[in-house]
Every structure is written in C-alpha cells, then in structure tokens.
Amino acid sequence: MTHPLLDLAPLTPAHFAAIEQRVARLLRTEQDVVIMQGEALLPLEAGIRSGARPGSTALNVVTGPYGQTFGNWLRDCGATVVDLAVPFHTAVTADQVRQAFAEHPEIDFVSLVHAEAATGNTNPVAEIGEVVREHGAMFYLDAVASIGAEPVLPDAWGVDLCVIGAQKAMGGPAGVSAVSVSERAWRRFAENPQAPRASYLSLLDWKARWIDGGRKALLHAPAQLEMLALEACAERIEAEGLDAVMARHATAAAATRAGAAALGVLEPYVYEARDAAPVATTLRAPAGVDASGLVARALAADPALPLAAGGGALAKEMIRVNHYGPDATRGAVHASLAALGAALGEAGLAVDLEAARRAVTGAWE
Ligand SMILES: *Cc1c(COP(=O)(O)O)cnc(C)c1O
Image (cartoon, rainbow, N blue to C red):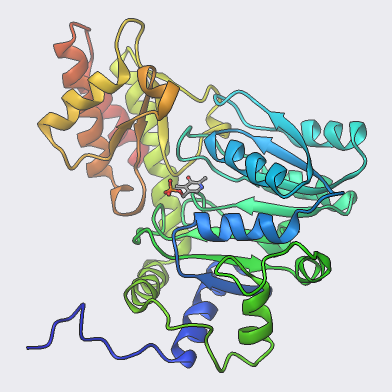
C-alpha cells in the first residue's frame, strides 16, 4: 500500500526552482532566493558566517532573544560588534541606528530582527533601511516572525539578506526556510575567505552550483516533505491573498490588545501599539501573578490555545498570545482571552469577560 508521506517521487530541480520562484513572489523580490532545507536558524547562521569576518564592524540591534544569538555568531566570526540593545517593551528607532553610525562610522554590517514573536515587538525596517543605505553597510534581516503578518519588502527596503521561515505567520511547518541574497551580498561573500564553502552552511555553494549552473542540478537530495509543505504553504497564502493574510494578523493583534485591556487587569507588554508585532501579542501578568502558572491554568482548560509564557527570565511576567498562521482568527483570540480571563478569575482577580468579548468583536468589525 502506498503511503502519502513516504512513497514520494523525487523532487525534480524544475519543481524546486518553481518553489523558489513562489517564495520570491511572496517577498516581492528580484534577488536570488536560496531555500535552505532546515529550520530558520540555518540561513540565519549561514548569512552571518558568510558576511562577517575579522576586520569588519557589525551593528547588532538587540530587541529580543534572537539579536543576542546573532551577536554571538558575529563575534565568533571575528567581527567587532557594536550592540544596540533596546528594552523588549519597545522598538528600535531609525534615529538610534543613525546615532550608532555617527559614533562608529566603520560599521559595515547591520543585523536586525524585524518582528520578535518572543517579545511581541516589531521594528521600523523601511526607515532603518534608509539609514543603512546612506552608509553603504550590508543589511541582514530576520523576517521569520514578520513574513505573512506584515509587509516584508527586501528590495524596497535595501535588505541584502532577508531570512524567512514557514512556521509562524506563513502557517507552515518548522523545517523550511529561505533567504534572499542581493548582488552586493554575493560579492561580499565571495571576497570573504572565511565564508563557509563546501559546507551545509554554505550559501556560496548554492550560488556556484545551483544558481550559476542555471538551476539544473541540486546540491543534494532535497527534503521532499518539507519542500512540498513549503509549496502548499505558499499556495494557501496565494489563494487567500497575502494582503488578506496580513490583515487577519493585524486584526488579531488589535483585537487581543483591546480585549486584554477590557479584561481590566492585563497590560500590554509592548507599551505603544505601533511597536507591537502583528504576529503575536505579549501581555504583562498582574503583580503577584506568575505568568507561567497562569498560562498553565488556561491551557489545562484547552491545550490547543495559542498561549505561552515568556521564555527564560520572562516566564514570570510575560504572557504570549501566538495568534499566527491558522490561529490568526477571531475564534482563537476570543478563546484565548476567555481562558486567560477564567484563569485570572481563579487566581482571585476581578475580570470583565463580557467587556473583553465585546472589545474583540469590535476590533474584528
Ligand atoms: C520563531 C523565530 C525564529 C525561528 O526560531 P525557532 O525558535 O526555532 O522557531 C527566528 N527568528 C525569529 C525572530 C523568530 O520569531
């Protein structure tokens, strides 16, 4: 008996190239797109190891946990790293980036996370891109948590390396990811003796053997399941319309913010709505209430809800509503706030469940 997941025909180079094209359309980019067959950390690490080297100075913007990881990779590559850290409840501004260039004109690489699912903020990439372009630095962007939830426009914004993954607002599985690479970035990689070559982390291998070879021969057998899932994911977004998918995420975020406020005891973790990411909404647990305990109580009622506590040190104070992908719906937001409200009630707090319900419905209409 044939099995739908196991008995697959090999994925042809033409099919692989067609999936690449679909991803390029999603990013509205003319740049080369390299699909890396691994979780998004693969192209994230590959981009830094290809572009960073001793003698270069990198501005690493830290607005959440991923920025910290990028700083470590940059240092490991021998680059001098200027960390620009802003509190997780806000976003970085283009002026802060301009100031960093004024203090360190030698900066030739900028790493930035667009939206942070882990902390719920989003950064003004278009404005920051203008500053980066004025200074001619290479611009590396982690758009894993923004793609599908808000516009991601590497060409318009001057992004040289734009990394995406399927597992957040694209509504796909973890395990497929892609990066768009500008001509400038390819040149910089080629001039970097340290850039990975003949390695699973190598972007240059894909350039030399796949792209420059006319996309005729793949470097290794492609991961069929993941590639088919990525294709299905892109098809589903195209069928709904990327704008409609993004609007669904923006509404889910606005509804969650409004509903949480209406409950009466939950503050948004990200102070200003304009800094809040459409992909996920973070909330601050009331004083004296442990966020992870509260989330555990809410999940005990319904384990399928898209709720989590903050990671690491944030577990005590941060509640995350991961309203992305198939959970960017009115139903998921209503259910999440109802479950959080019930858990807060059990903890002895007075909450207004009906006001929260009305606020969510209002935001949706
Ligand atoms: C989710 C996410 C990733 C991917 O990492 P996982 O934790 O493995 O899902 C990378 N960058 C950002 C900003 C993310 O939100």
